[in-house]
Length: 250
Length: 250
Image (cartoon, rainbow over the protein chains, first blue to last red):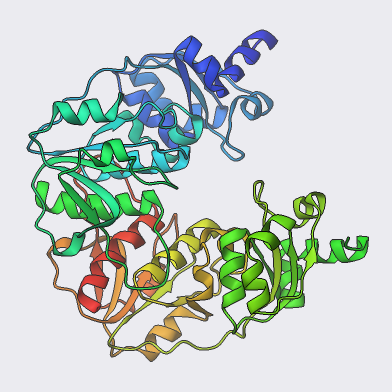
């Protein structure tokens, strides 16, 4: 049993303000917790696990000498932001915001003012699937440690590095690299020969890439439309772009 | 002002059971309502609009002689399943479940047991964008008239036909067409020459395509993975597949 004060403290990490103050964030759900246990470079300050998880993953808990507290169903319900999960939560120390070095032989993904935490998590999952594990975010992007982002990333936050920084300044630093951007009026993605590495920029859900960042693009690209829908969601557009870039980059 | 009973009746359409009994469904939000007004083949039995919408779309209301009731903020809040919207709701008559004819010169999309209403809506939006406006659903797919599906489709439900039917029987009927399927162990999507038309099958979020439907596939395909993520969400996989198929089909 957790004390009332401890429970209250852990639960407070559901709020951004408290996460930032404490530099801690929550990881929830069965698979992400099992992956986190095996990812040694993360500092976990608290494991709250259910009897179900402890039994199913006894081998991992033993192998990694995990010290945990057993959670009651009610404690899990209070600590977790998910309606349905029966595994537990971990509290993890945020890594430092370390600069990401864009390399010419692979793609770095740059996100300009992405607002929806689910979209950011989905983009991390796609970046992980396609082998582009570097994501640079503008300071006005949603926080990568938002519980919804962590959940939507399905454990990919463990393998994809993120770095929050001013995008125009970052892109200016890499002015020699091809800088692709997803726009409504660019070159046809299907008919353009794509560089084998560089930076891909994706923009805000409603307004796309901001003018200051657009000015840094060397290759504006558009997913061709064949039907009636007005737009694609940014996560869907990311899927399509990364699939094309992975084909040429890897 | 709507009467208490009328409000209760309209609100009841948020439940599947009532939608099925009445053969009516809800459309919500600014853009979908504006698109619905211009799509004359749909029978709308009720327009509940806010003063904001009525002012902004006065020209549409006049052009299409729309008879509406003004909704108060409280009525809108009760009728709508969305937390934030200021436009209104419409109640629309469900079209009949009419058979879809798969044609060799384009792709028909077949969905096997898709459970998440947001995924189905996103798939409709993608199908619309890429010009594949025919979607056949297995009977155990989530209902296309679920409010979350309608909202996620962003108006694309107006342009994409859906048909619920037994999938193995449907595919048997079109045994002469190429039948592609998204699987974990199929041919590499990037390295396979794709037919210019046929049927593309996408499967359940957790279990993929069921064995009975797998038996009907002529071309099992896989999106190549270059990194660490275990899987892609079905809506992301649909984006990648349709982007590749649109390139060869159109």
